[in-house]
Image (cartoon, rainbow over the protein chains, first blue to last red):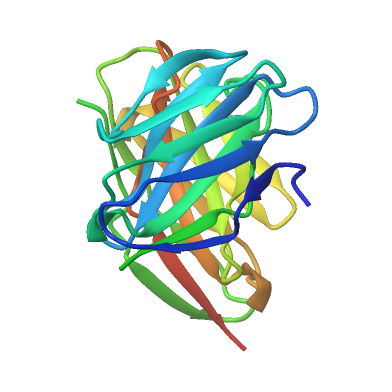
Length: 113
Length: 114
């Protein structure tokens, strides 16, 4: 058990809908990272938050947004969903990616029908 | 441009054989960090190792070893005396020092046959 929790584990929804994925980092970790893994695109970094502030942004679509709350949990919002958004979404946490281990949650599998 | 290439899409070896997974990276930054991650069939991602660009010492952890060579921009991963539990997809990744925008390779799927 990595200590990073993600809910829900599975999500099935329709095109055009909006969903929210939730992540709770390991106790003490200030950074939260979101990743998308799909067959087409492979593993991609989406966005990083550090202690409530956006720190780095990767290949995140404008239809996607995220935030990190004062209790350090994070939410990834995906809107106007398309078939191509079907993927496994991972959250990870660390204190400092350059010096500390990064721990991953089990992922949320999103299926857009 | 930052890029990570894992040319081996899939590798199969018989248990107890040694196997090396290749990783070649591109970056214009002088300071950067390299990583390896493991994704077993269960799907979770596991961090294996991090190496910064100033530390070219090879690292060994049990049956795992990593060879970092700046001259060839490579960060290869060797599993000695492979075991069936090593079957997984392995990802090599890179971040520049300026931010945490991690760039992953496409991954190498490793099958260890009993």
